[in-house]
Length: 242
Image (cartoon, rainbow, N blue to C red; front, side, top):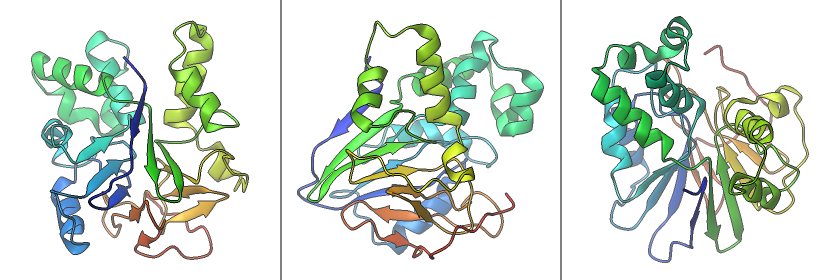
């Protein structure tokens, strides 16, 4: 399988990305209605973390079957992948919102693990103005091409692959350092993972997890053609308490 999924330009509609969902699909549907999302023409890309913490995590399988919805793997999918094989601590998983899956029958745990295990780690989307990259947390390499080449390199040492996955799914180093460097071979990189009060940009890295899954938060949607966000992006980073 490939850990990279590539999409050509959408010639009939619009492309959007949305921040972490965390089992709040009804609220996401409301946001899509607000922007006039057209399921026949438009596409929606998720930065991952479809599950945990919300009441509708079980709907992730349905959403992943929709032709217009595409997601990368987040760290919460990573936990669900590891859970049935005993590679995830029960208390840690439950503390991070995984109780719904801990309580699932074995066959459903395996189904979620297998489905999430088939998700790409990186998505790239062509737009009229250039290529957009999507990953959950951060690009672990200096360039996007180096990252995607490493992901699909079957001969990559396991220790190096683990480190790449760790950064892509879990890292907050760039945003904690407020690192303004860009990914040079992308028009923009879209990420989630770190909850903010408002969308933010560091270099050409766009952070769009604005806590649509917590009280007082909201889903940020970004138009991949224009890089305009709904709601608009303020000038400064604003951390949430989520």
